[in-house]
Length: 259
Image (cartoon, rainbow, N blue to C red; front, side, top):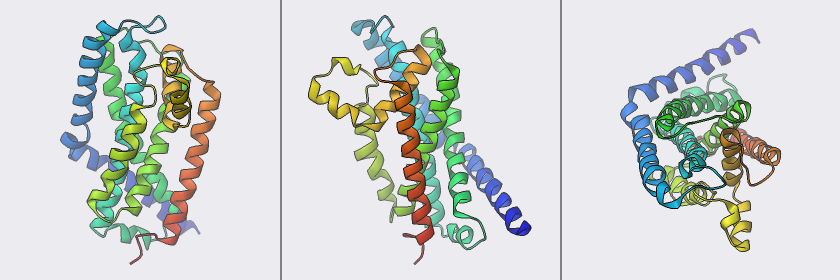
């Protein structure tokens, strides 16, 4: 029993070490592009268009969209890190060594989640620094900000892991971000308030889970939310539980892993 425990501890820290090494080794692919992308968003939407649009609910437009831009970067980086890392391990056949070891499946899941959290944390820190040059950044509720960051990174790391497990070829890992995540992100209220939408679009927005994440971030940074913040947190926690169970199940049955 002690040996199995030690094996799982070693496996956990080995996965984390591999993820950190991978992120830092290929930083021109993992760190630099999202920083450049978010800088362009700040320049175009925040600085140039923001002056034309004017304030929303008493806040400068750039201050209103910053929470959503932070959320967008955390989602894309947590997801991309896990899906690409796991599928690469699967493609190179070294994931099989981990699967046949005494490592528990939940340790594998948590290890890859930490990889997504670490990469998104690096980007998160850079975004906060960049944002401070464009406006007087004020954090309304630091606790909710940390909860929003952590839950978002965990949720989309899990989604990335599911995609990485189920993907059969490299093209498959781009389907979800292109046709699912991107539309959901842009229709989640990053650049506008739900109050500006007609009733039918409000209903469509409310069934978008990313809308609830946007509101948690917006509340934590500027103290403004379109819906109840505790309901938003509960929704994200429920989704984390659901996707964790899915990950645990498909790892257990070895879906697309046991050939």
